[in-house]
Image 1 (cartoon, rainbow, N blue to C red):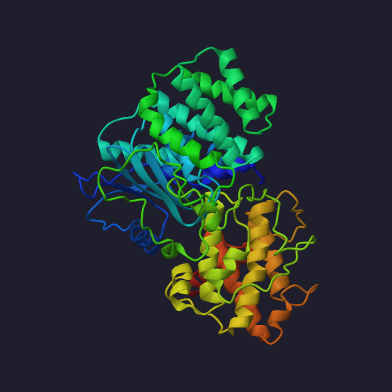
Image 2: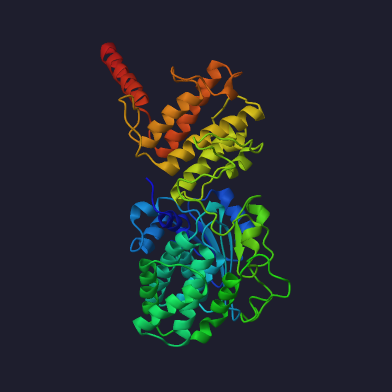
Amino acid sequence: MKKSKLAGILLCSMCLIAGSAVPAMADSVKVVTLGADLTEEQKETMLRYFKVNKNDVQILTITNQDEREHLSSYVPLEQIGTRTVSSAYVKPTQSGGIRVRTANLNWVTCNMIATTLSTSGVKNCEVVAACPFEVSGTGALTGIQMAYETATGEKLDETKKEIATEEMVVTGNLADQVGKNDATTVINKAKMEVIKNGIQDVDSIYNIVINVANENGVSLTDEQIGDIVDLLVEIAQQDYNYEDMAATLEMVDGNVSSEEVGELDDEDDVTVDAGEIVDGDSIVAGLDDSILGDDIVASSTEDPGLEQETGMVEGSAPEEDEWTEDEWTEDGETVGEGDSSSADAISEFDTSSLTEDQMYYFNQADTFFTGEYYGDTDALHTAMGEDATAPVLDEKTAEALTKEVKKLYLDILVNGTDTYVADGTEMYMTTELNMLDKGLKKIFGQDESAAAIEALTDITEEDKTTLYKDTMKFFEKLYGETSTEEEYAEDTSSAEGALEGELEE
């Protein structure tokens, strides 16, 4: 199940594609995209974050099929996933270049989006790309392109859009090795020089890439250089006007080239060449990040230090199998105390390598934990239906149990199923469910070989069994499967009923 970092990146925010669009207001110049798999409450949260009324903007509902239609040429279908949750807010402007703000995109930055969007042919625009929970964000570009086309009523050049997508892929791959700022710096600076001087010769482009990398202290492999050169050759063949792109490219250059991003003096104006926004109705200013929670990651082309202030230090995004030292020991046991609520507890776990599909599952599980273990009736009904009930746990027990089950599930999502060895006792077709079943039996003391976790010491055996069964029912519902034991019981019951009917006749 493990995939490269870029695979996870591409999955996480590709959901901004505007395909199945149902406009709410035909003459609007502002467009909001909402992922179809967001809950109604999450959609309302995004609208509040964007500070918009649904009657005042054009709203596009984005489905997973939209993603597949627009992205399958670049990304394998199995990596696109089946859920669409990210959102965007787009407003074309008359000047000022491309200004971007992101929230809960934990890998792609505002500068990556801005410079790549310029390759699409967009000249002036404001963009907010966000999600109710953390996702990676590389795929945001496609949806923003489509939202821009809807807002302006003009189609962007298809070739340029394809090159822009390639640019995001190349930048994402490079960022995985050298860091986001260095990757953006090299590609943006080289692109500026190629377009500004009208250079098309391959050897000249190669030399530009080498020189830019050396000047900025970035070490590149031959393969990385080749990928960047191939991209720039395609860009060079298009009819870009540097004056149309200057505001954006120079603004990004100022942002990512600063030696200490986030420690700029008040006098430092890294956007001096970006021009002024004509109207005062900026959608990237004055957003309330607290609407999305206390621990979001944010970035802004207007505020280069925002990303560091909100928790993402350059190069800190972990690999798929890397855990932070504050939370895990070498054998995978939790060592931190954690917070006192389920909503805060999720931030203790590193979810940055999860695909959008996996993140959806993980957040659905978090809703169930809040309902089942913490006793939040609304959350439990959302996860399991109006008739669901659960044993009452004290907060300390709920917290400890939530962390144990989350740890089990996140480990399965991150590390995959390759190491699982069937032993003939499996009750499910889905390997993840079999792994969860075995792990949960140990947590809840339903396995003869292990006692329940210490936090459940004072819980009755009946309640332990109920909690185990309820938890497995949730995961069965999540994965759309029932155990073979339940299927056997249903089949037996049906057969007995039929036999009784025959005897009565």
